[in-house]
Image (tube, rainbow, N blue to C red):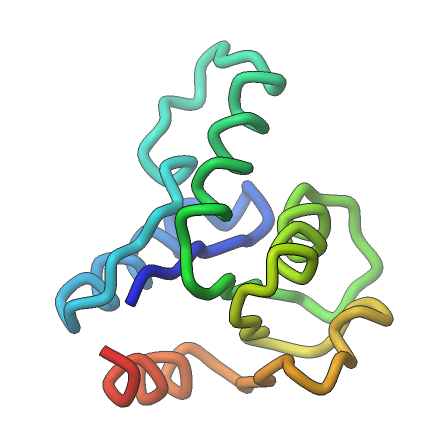
Length: 120
């Protein structure tokens, strides 16, 4: 199972920890943004990598906050919808596409880890 972890960039360190726990369960994390340096990589190059990483994943996991916010994770979520990927949200729904019937809504990181144990 390969997953792409999408979250606000400010949560990078937190999501790295989640990625490590998922990897320990045998889940492959395709989110290279978690490992890129924070200094000077052009966003256009980052976006291209993100598109490739979403395409490579079986499922997109989107970490939400419940606040109206800007963020590439919304575009990544849309790409995953268009590509027919599995869709998981950890946190509250933030926009209309989060209400699609194929979206799995989880209420925290522990539920994500429980889900990962089942699908690994």
